[in-house]
Amino acid sequence: MQKRKVVLTFPPSLIDQPVTYHLIRDYDLVVNILKAKISPKEEGRLMIEISGKRESLQRGMNYLQELGVEVQPLAQDIIWLEERCTHCTACASICPTKAIAVDRKEMKISFDKEKCIACELCVSVCPYKAIEILF
Ligand code: SF4
Ligand code: SF4
Image 1: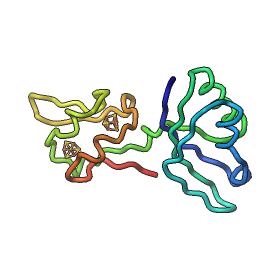
Image 2: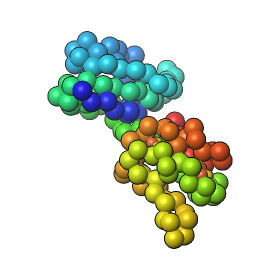
Image 3: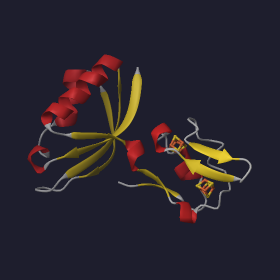
Image 4: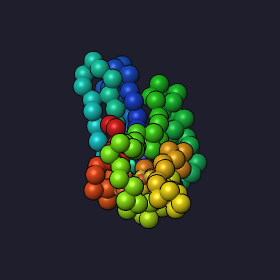
């Protein structure tokens, strides 16, 4: 069983399509909608947590891409606002993937987006709102 947080971007022509319904029914996936920004005649965005067997997830992702839905890991939407950061390191100790690392010599943190799995733990722990989700 695998779980991913992704952002789906729909062109206007697909906004009315029951895409999440198909993911659940036809691909045997569990879909949890976390946020949605959809307005008629405009591009829509859906933040979802999706889980299921590895093969089912792959098939579901292929279905979305063939349909013309852009799929992007939520981690791409996590941003570190360095100018707000005081390098208190509170977030580094809870980051499960070491996407946030501390340079012990300089006592400064750095953020590696490629390692981020968008668990959002750092977002809630940061007292200065230096980590945000762009959605
Ligand atoms: S969202 Fe999770 S994985 Fe990504 S930087 Fe924050 S704590 Fe680390
Ligand atoms: S918790 Fe916030 S202020 Fe502290 S190091 Fe992390 S991003 Fe910077």
